Length: 289
Image (cartoon, rainbow, N blue to C red):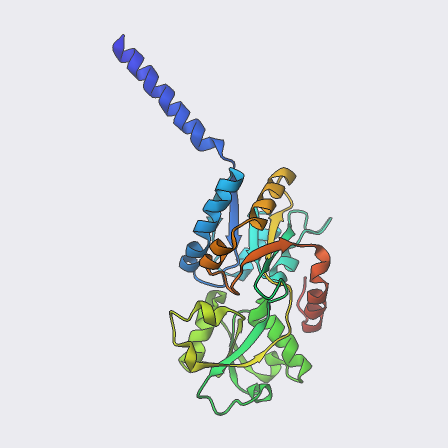
């Protein structure tokens, strides 16, 4: 009899433990993979733990191998919440009768300079005496983050076009493997490329990895809305609202400690009209959305 009672108590304890594990609703989160998986995990793990405390939800971080896979994940609703550049967001946003499972923006990243502090850089080696102005990139080898990278190519292409340069036609371009911006910086430092295109804040992120003093910013593009937080159309409204509020209330110190590219220190509510200027840039550069 004692053995039966002990077994019953053990089973009850196990069921209680399992119930505890299942009590938290599980949601998925992914960041556009502009940096390595290791860096993304280091950035987001403390933030996701804070979000779990605030919402009672269990966040599972997912990783896409490149921009194309990430975009499809969002378009198909295969990830509940996402953090991406505004171009990828627009390309994966919900569209009635077209992209029913797509994402809907609920917040935009904010830096000390506001929520329109997202732009592209042309970087070269500091000792490169053959490129003195943007006009000099014609005929040169360039590494870009990827053809769908907002501040890793599209913003630079639009700016170059405004200055009489079509980088696809006038330069010898190479897309960074896996769309990693660290590799763009490395290609310039190692003289595999004459110039590279990366987002603002990337050199600061890499200052402990490489000697950024060996680089020079040749030009900056105009500024656009920063990175976007979005929820899949299939996420329950009450869940999406709970997560939205939690993101908007993340402590500034915690965000700065996470070192998200661009020195993000907060998030502000987003609306679809925030992306009107960006859509015009996409139309200019022939990028579908």
